[in-house]
Image 1 (cartoon, rainbow, N blue to C red):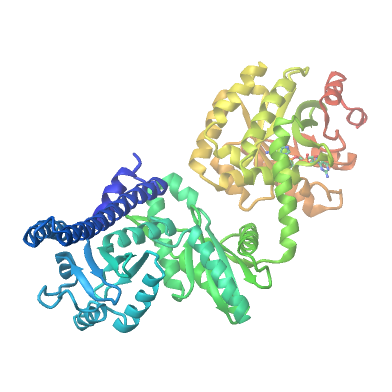
Image 2: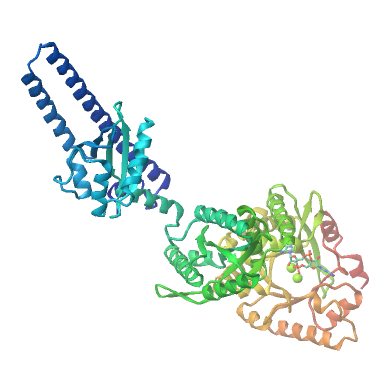
Length: 638
Ligand code: C2E
Ligand code: MG
Ligand code: MG
């Protein structure tokens, strides 16, 4: 690695091993400024020497002509001065040459010959710049045309301005040449080898434009390339496509296996992406697990779809990461220019929206941007923002729906059902916002509020009435669930036996061991666990064996069409009830809307009913009144 760069890089390295590019850039800039200052100082001292020599000459000539000094003395003084000048000249780190007004070389130092591998015998004062350059050219030390170069430089010098040129020597070095005109029409040229400095600049430029982990172009370079490609596409009237990719379960790999595995996975994905595409396609890493591609010259949309398919397929192949087999998938959003916009930001935004859509549609797939996505996503984002605020603004409220025991027609439990009292939209049903809160992870905080509020409300109810609270699968995966339940019970002063937690089958689909362990912990506190919406999942019976539920709530889809002539429906409810009974579980028929349905479910052996017939979900004050009156009027008359 470049020495100067290595030193500055050490200084700019943060304790965590990352290089701070800003600090590095600043340090290297300072080092360059120092070199420039040295260069300028050397130029100044050379000019001073030249001037001094000139003045001395003139003074001596004047004194010789006045007769005050002997010619021999003048020559002696000049010799001394020349020796000093030679010593200074030949010990400079830069090469130096001085030319007269007709481009004849008057002075050259040793460094110049060394720099270009020239023999001091070949380079003699009196030769022209063009001759000098011709010798260099014959030795492969000058790439240009000596005559042209000389004539252009002379033109510049006659204008009287200093000029710095950066010349690439054919052997790979870069030399900075500073040409400063002198009053007599000649000029002084200094040459400095800046190859190392250039290399350091290139490394910094590379680091500033590439991701250090995968060495792919970063977001900055991606945006520059996109802007350039868009300009070319516009002038050439062709289309281009932007792909926005994101790994589907990267966070899980990082969280479960650790960051070194996450990093390794990103490198492998980068490698597969590069292998999938032609080299004229830019592949960049634009964020943590986000990548982006530019397809510069798109013949037809099908080409983009084929490539997207190929990428999804390549990323899906298992990875062997240091002995661990990891599987990940990628979702891809595609925006096409000019169809979906002609500005880099617009295209990226649209590709991102299409990605959002690909993820929503099941992941591991790709979607092209369509204008209507914009409106859907804007509405969705607005909903997310207001949902985030709702908890802190106290916009959630709980309604309670009574659950009646069919043995004695008493209300033994009320289910807490959340409502969002939206300032503009009024009461919003949970079906509209719970799935979004789950995706946002906000359900954990909302669920904690529900638990605390429901326990506090239930503590005020008569007859030891229980309260049922719904738990989202996301809450079940949260390690804090058990402490949160204990806290809610303790601060409400509610005995654990009066709390029922309702979970759905989907809870048992994921991370089963940890989930079942949490369920046992809750049960050991005295909390009762119910299986909600039974019959709507996949393989319900196998889930019943994973945990001994206290209660099974038969989903209302089995109840809503129930009538005395519906033999099949009755058979299902009867079998489920019998099965539950044999496993020691209580059964609740959900969605009972009519007296007939209540009688039928009672006849087939259900223990409890819940539904509009017994009571709708209602605000706390109403349900409290109902509980005090002990029984709902409809049930009394039944
Ligand atoms: P769920 O737990 O099955 O709750 C019963 C749902 O059925 C409630 O809908 C209730 O209003 C409705 N329902 C009850 N009886 C009848 C009936 O006779 N006929 C009909 N057609 N519907 C009836 P709601 O309140 O809209 O809640 C829907 C779902 O939202 C709940 O289903 C539950 O899964 C979820 N949910 C509600 N509150 C919470 C909560 O605090 N946390 C979580 N995680 N989910 C909740
Ligand atoms: Mg429920
Ligand atoms: Mg239910």
